Image (tube, rainbow, N blue to C red; front, side, top):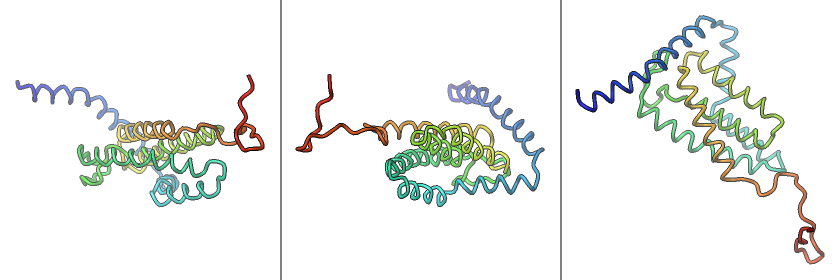
Length: 199
């Protein structure tokens, strides 16, 4: 047995439980599909389209005077690498979607919807910390919609969300605030120079 063959068998042995779980989850979700819920899930999926996301970021940049531009920059800085990684993996892996579609340019693994939703949830939670739970629930809803509509396997969604969350955290760290929005500015003297902090 060659090293390449042994390596391939090792990878298959590692992936086998994941693929089995994918199939089990898919069967469980699809057995509960109903036309009424389909419409809701399609609406949630459509909310993750690029046009909708960019429109929302533009609104944040314009309407949030405190930190809208910074938040929009963070989001774009998170979304760009997330989508580059996702699209690269899609073409490299070429996994068929559970509904049978098999296009190398639009493969199943990983989920771009999940990546974008997770990245935005991280960035928006940084801006509005009290709404972090809501952003997490919305991201999970987007991920669930992809499973429910039979467009992704569970592992597609999990890996996509992990990629998005990672780029979201990195974007927030890269553009970290030196002051949080609304924090008190140091008092200034008449000449305009900041006063030294009291001992």
